[in-house]
Image (cartoon, rainbow, N blue to C red):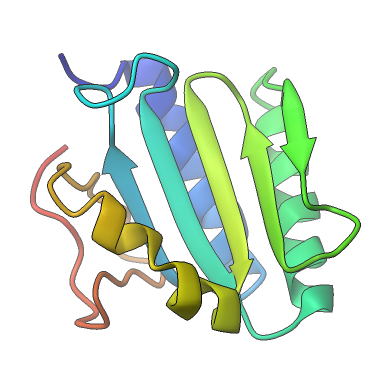
Length: 134
């Protein structure tokens, strides 16, 4: 099973919105074979709490334009790790320190990455390379 076209569309749009707010190390995983609850994960990081919130706001605004609203939001008050659950897509916006500590990429390293557009600051395991599968 692979991620639906809608999930990939939302993931790419969210990645672009994050990139517009200068998010770092943006990476997307197709987790549809591993999880029944969602198709994709988008993970990105920010230098500080304020930037985390700015990225979250930009993603929500962009996806609202695609008629998508999160069914759940977590961590917004602290601004260190915000999770936006769009059912088909789960977005993780993390403070850079938390991203290193929790290392979500390590947990999902066996999942294929979703190729993101060239205008998105892509990273995986610090090598700056995008994934090879869509």
